[in-house]
Structure formats: structure tokens, C-alpha cells
Image (cartoon, rainbow, N blue to C red; front, side, top):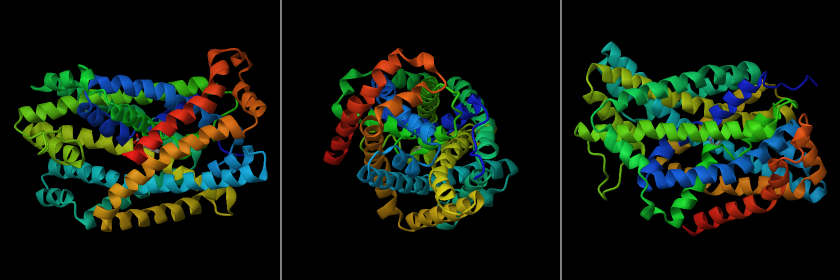
Length: 448
Ligand code: PHE
């Protein structure tokens, strides 16, 4: 067997993992959840969740992945000591692979919308008004075309492998994403109304701290760090034994939460600038518009009202959204592809194009039955399955995997870790605290 590919550097891994984590969940989900959940109060709870629950769960994935050097299914089967637990491992692994594929099938649709609006900003620059109109029509033909282009981009990167696909593109695109994000914030801050948005975002309203907010923050942290479905496990499996996992995990968590926070400095002020320009920013029931209408109506109306420069702002904004989507979608596709490459005779190329096309087919089915399926698939995957799978992965790390082998993996390459806070706390934390916390989320989401 050819030797397994690896990330060529620590920086490459951080860019890839941050690329997976930073996505629509950060730039769109987090700011709007914050705005509708009492501003900074939500931010505080979210950060607590990210570091007290998501980080330890992320560590479970990275450690299992790096130890097993394989896809999620083989990894879980490999650390299970008995026939029965091995069977459970295969089941959980397969469940993860299916959920990762389903997440990609709805994510691809949304990313296709972003690409359409990106193309629209370009046709606007060129003065092609008919093309612009077509690009914003949300018809199925447009949706399928832009989604198809997005999937082809995703597949091209994945078929090139780890270092010359995932790593190469993440290290190029993530710095670009950061530059665009900060440039847009700087611009929006100079606009009238931005300070009102900033106030809504940063002044906490603790009267809104209700149990559902705490649980929302937990779900958001899970989605944002790409947990449960094996993305981080697979990325961890391409890491060299020399790297210190706890430190890398902290860095990824910090970059992910930091970017979510910073994205709030863009989106929420932008909403209030739009209001200043006469756009309605509230729903009929008086809540802040947060869903697709925010991204595809409120913000475009704002860009339109900015005159010439608005076209460039729109271009920058939809480039930002498209990059964020792409570096996340590649990590989703890598989950089923790594399984196929390692467990079937298929080459990476064949596996990528076959699986990618199947997922594209799923997205098309969702598009044609949008009202029935779109929301259903999102809640099935992100609300129910991600926490459930996260819980199972913590159980695998804490209960099923032999403790000595787990400790040996943590120490691998870093004997000095023995005796540190992480060493003393994490193994029991992931065994007891994480599953209980996740269980609470789960029960809440079932009861809701
Ligand atoms: N973390 C990504 C985001 O914030 C979404 C994602 C979920 C990516 C699951 C991979 C796996 O948008």
C-alpha cells in the first residue's frame, strides 16, 4: 500500500481545520443567533460552550483520528476491543459518513446561492443586466447550475488529495477570507447606523438568558467546529505524530470562535446600516430578519443603495461567503471519500467523482422538494444527528477505547504532556462531562 498522505505542516493543518470549521455557521449563523438571543449574553454562553464542550469533543476526534490513521469507520472499529463494540463502531462510523454527506447536500444548495450572487456582482460590474436578473431569480435551473459548479470545485480539490488539494487550497483561501472579512468590517464601520448594530451586538441583555439560549449556543458550537460527523477525525488522521494535539485543538477552537465573533462585527452593524438606508430589517412578528432573506434581500438592498462602490462591496461579501463554504464543503466530502478510498478498490479520483455526483443528486432531490425536505434535512443532520454522533464519539474515546492506548496517543511525540492540566482532566472529562452535556442538548432538541 502506498504510504498515507499527511498535511505537510502544522500551519497547513490549522488552515485546513479552521477552513472546515469557519463556514456559513460562523459568518451567517452565529451573528444572527446572537442578534436574536440578547447580543453579548449569547456570545458569553457560546464561548463557554465552545471551550468547555466543543473543544474536549474536538480533542476526542483528533486523538482517535491520529491514532487510527484511517477514515471514521475503520477508526472506530479499530479502537473497539470486542466483536460487539466493533460492530457498534462500524454502525456509528457509517452513520457519521451518511450525515456528513447529507450536510453537504444541503450546504451545497446554500453555497450555490452564494456563487449565484457572486456571479451577479460580476455581471453588475459589466453592466449585463439580463444576466444579473437571471442570477437572482432562485429558479431551479439557476440553482442546479450554480450548485453544480460549486460541487465541481469541491470535487476537484478533494480529488487532488490532502497536501495538494485540501491543504494547498485552504492555505490559499483562508488568509484571503480573513483579509476580505476585516476590509469589509472597516468599511461598514464608517457607515451611518453601524454603531447601533454594534450596540445590539456588544451590550449584553442578560434578561434574555433562558435555557433554550444555552442549548442553542451548544448546538451552534457543535456545528461550527464541524463535530460529530468525522470531519475532524479524518483531518486528525492526516496529522504527523510529532504534533501536539491539545495545542492544535486549542488553536482551531480559538480561530473558529474568534472568527465567529469578528463576523458579528460585520453582519450586525451591516443590518443596521441597511435600516438607515430604508430597508426593513424586521419580520412581521418584530424579530430581526435572520434567514435567507437577510443574506439575499436585506444585504443586497444595502449594497444597491451604496451606489458604485456597492457593487464591489457585494463582490467582496459573496466572495467571502463562497470561500467560507468551499473550505467547509471539502472537509465534508473528505469523510465519505476517505472511507471509499481505504475500504474499496476505487482510486481517490473515482471515489471523489462518484460520491460527489451522488451527493449532487441528493441536493437536486432536496431542491425539487424544497418545502418538504430542506428544513427537515437541516434539523435531522445538525440538530439531532451531530450531537448524537458527538456523544457517541466521546463514549468511544472515554469508555470503549482502552485507556492505556488513549493515554499513549496523547503522549505520542510529547512525553512532557504527562502531568499537565489537560492530561489530568481531559480523559475523565470526555468520559463523564461531555456525554452528559451532549445528552442534555439532545433531550432538549427532542423535547422542543
Ligand atoms: N463548520 C461548518 C460551518 O460552520 C459546517 C460543517 C459542519 C463543516 C459539519 C463540516 C462538517 O459552516
